[in-house]
Amino acid sequence: MSSDLLDALTALEKQKGISRDVLVEAIEAALVTAYKRNFNQAQNVRVDLNLDKGTMKVYSRKDVVDEVEDDRLQISLEDAQRINPAYELEDIVEEEVTPRDFGRIAAQTAKQVVTQRVREAERGLIYEEYVDREDDIVNGIVERLDARNLYVGLGKVEAVLPAGEQISTETYQPHDRIKVYITKVERTSRGPQVFVSRTHPGLLRRLFEVEVPEIYEGIVEIKSIAREAGDRSKISVHTNNEEVDPVGSCVGARGARVQSISNELNGEKIDIVEWSEDPVIFVANALSPSKVIDVQVNEEDRSTTVVVPDYQLSLAIGKRGQNARLAAKLTGWKIDIKSETDARELGIYPRAFDETHVEEAEGQLDEELALNDPYFVEDEASTEFEEETIDLYSDDED
Image 1 (cartoon, rainbow, N blue to C red):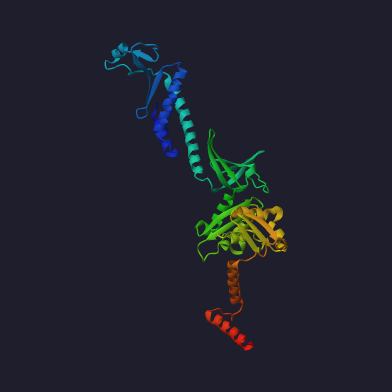
Image 2 (cartoon, rainbow, N blue to C red):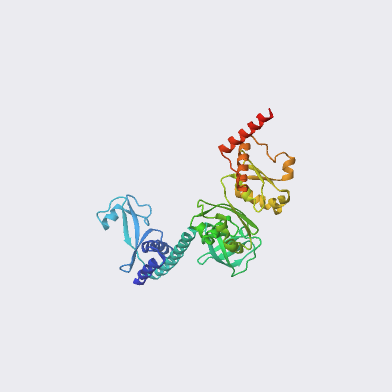
C-alpha cells in the first residue's frame, strides 16, 4: 500500500469534506469482504490499514474456549497459551494471515470504496444544500420532458416538476429558463430527489418578496394568498406603518412590480387587496374589483351575505364563480352574493336598525354633513339654542 493512497485520501478530505478516518474504516471493512471472497475464507478477520507507514495486514481472529467446535473461529486455551501465556478464556487471539498477492486486490477494492464514498458524500452535500432551500424559489433550465413529468436542471441536481404542478396554460421546451418553487426534498437510493412546483401559492409569495423591497424587509406583510395558477390570484397585504401604502407598494409605479410578476407567471392576473381584521371590510376588499354596498356577517358558521349593485353582480361572482371563490379562499369566510334588488325582496337589505345602529348611523351622517357643509357645527351650545327656539315658538302659538 503506497503513500499515494494517503495523499489521495487527504485531498478528498479537503475537497469533498469526507473525513479520512471514515474512508479508512470503509476501506478496511471492504478489504475484509474482499479477503473472504477471493480466498474462500470463512474465519473472522480484521484488516489493519496503516496509511502513515504504507502497510496493510490481515489478521485472523479466534475466540479462546475450553472445547473447540470450529477451528476456523475458535482456539483452545492450551494452544492459545502456547502463543502467549497471558491468554485466558473468552480472549481473542489474532494471527497474521496476509496473502502474498493481496496488495493488488486491496488496491482495487480501495479504489472502489473511495469512489462509492465520494459519490455518497456528494449526494449528502447536495441533499443538505437543497433541503435547506425547501419553500424557496430557484432558477432552473428545462432539460427534458416525458409523459408525466418535466425535469428541471438546478445545477447540481435534476428536479422533478410533476404534471399537476405545471401551469396548464404554459408550454415548456428544452433549454427554457423558468423559476420554480421547491416543495419537497427526499433521500433516495439514487441520491437526493427534489420536487418543484409552478402552481404553489408559495411561488407567488416568494416572487413578491423578490420584487417588492417592502415585503422583503418586513414592512409590508402578505397575510393570505388564493391562487388558481395561470389564470388569476388574489393576495391580501397589511402594514403597521401608517406612512406606507401596502397595496401601492406591491403594485409599483404604473403597475411595474405586479406586472413583472404577472409576466413571470405567463400573464396570470393578480388582485392585491388590503387585509383587515374586520371581516366586513376584508370581505368587501377581497371581492375587488366589484363594488360592495353591504356585508352581513354570521360569526357562528363564518359566513357572510354580500349585497352588490345589480349591474355588478356578474363582476362580483366572476367568470365561472372565480372571483367569489378566490375571495372566499383569501378571507376564510363563506360568501353568499346577492344583488341589491334580490336583497330588498328578501328583506335583508336595508337592514332593520336597533338603537345602536341608529346612533352609529346618525354619527356617520353627522360626519358626512361636516365634510359637505362648512357651516355645519354640532356642539352643546347649538343644541341648546335649537331647543329654546322650539319652546319660544310653542309659547307664541299658545
